Length: 309
Image (cartoon, rainbow, N blue to C red):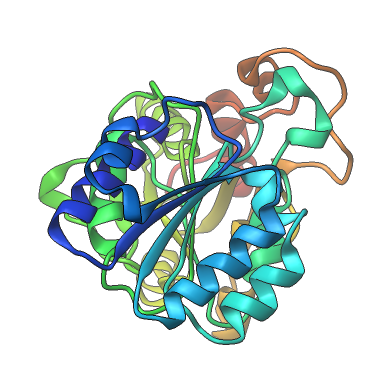
């Protein structure tokens, strides 16, 4: 997914002279072709994430569209003030391409796990947050990002994820995509968790439970219209995200449902209020923290009392 996003930066740079790239201490070969073709629009800085945010803000003020890439935790925890003041306060069209959203960097431990990135950025006015499900949807995200007038956080998975998105569904920032139909429950997911939500929906269907799946690729602005329309037609809502259960997608869904006065049960699946323990693979941490299709299935059954309508 990361390679797809960076290749798209180069493609966009060919189409639009406003596009430029800023990296923070990335590998020597990163976007080598773009560096060769557009040396004046390629910048590789050192370990100075706060500085590159200010740099991107200045360039955006001069009419450029900066695409910035580094590890998700460094784009959020490390330079939160600069993102808030330099980018969001001025509502500048910079793109934060965040590598390793969620538990991707499990081998490096809790310092590198982007488990609260959505929560802290969702609180910022003007910020847009997008988490595509696969590399093909990433292409559509990048195409849509070019003329988006606000700062944007693009949350990347590790890459190599199964392709479940469909070109015919299109892509529009702020418009969720329904990927399965059902009237018993609504599963709302984002990023690569949508793949597991679909797997859970298939398992439920085999037992006669029809669960709709809404892929909320844009967490902010949330597609309240699609959410409330589907929620009104189902008995309960289950949210799933590779993120803390508090502050992210699940919280956004709860707020939307509550503000609309919709009386629906909402159960959230996410990380608990702890730093995940141990090191290892992303899959190991996903399993040990219950971010699985089996748990989604069981949570849906709990939400609806274990019976189809």
